[in-house]
Length: 267
Image (tube, rainbow, N blue to C red; front, side, top):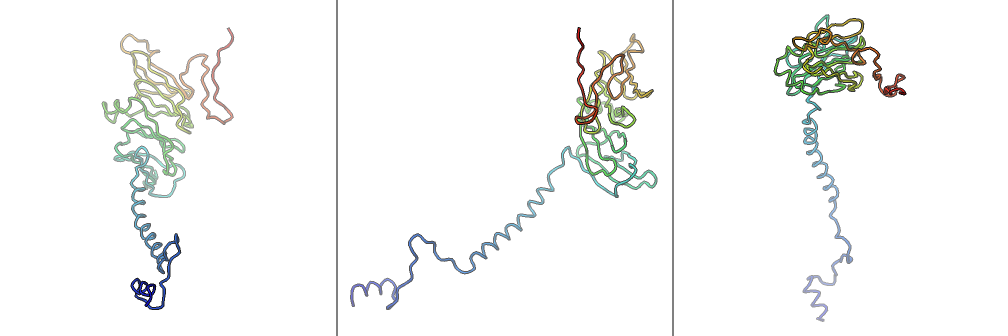
């Protein structure tokens, strides 16, 4: 026996037959069915992860804690509004059937103001909302009024009476009346259009209002010695009504009546 023959026999123990070799640098041969096993494992992992992803998506809270629930098809004309428990409800004024409810986590509604296409609500945390009155499927906008939540909490739910006031018959502008100020919002998009502060030593009283000739009259008590004319303020959608005023227009950008700034004339 030659040396080469004995070496081959010691290495492989095979007579007259060489073992196949893998070329240098090439990957080892894959067993049949390996790709299928890997694909199957990937599909199983994806199936297991899907419920977790779905649960995470459902667990995300809505902005401002809103929860809108539809109970019946959209109502036309606009449904009536009421507060029941911790929810704003839209319902059929004739039969009483609920159409939708709006609740907010950690807050409760204190007042509602209906308008064509709008359901304005004042909440205990000082937020004002505008919900789509017909369908109840979306909240158009939220606006926080500074200091309102503390003032409401100090006086109870009765303080909310009269805080929300429409400034024109079509409710294109909404006033929020607080002791410190009157703020007016464009109802189309919630844009703040003007703010009227109370006079020093005076305070607006939202429960003492009246309407005449397209104007909203708001009481502004100033204490003993003040003239009655100083204790009544007249406003409309363009702001305080005073002689020779030149207010900004409230139409949104792009409308025919564009907002313009008042420019002083030549001196």
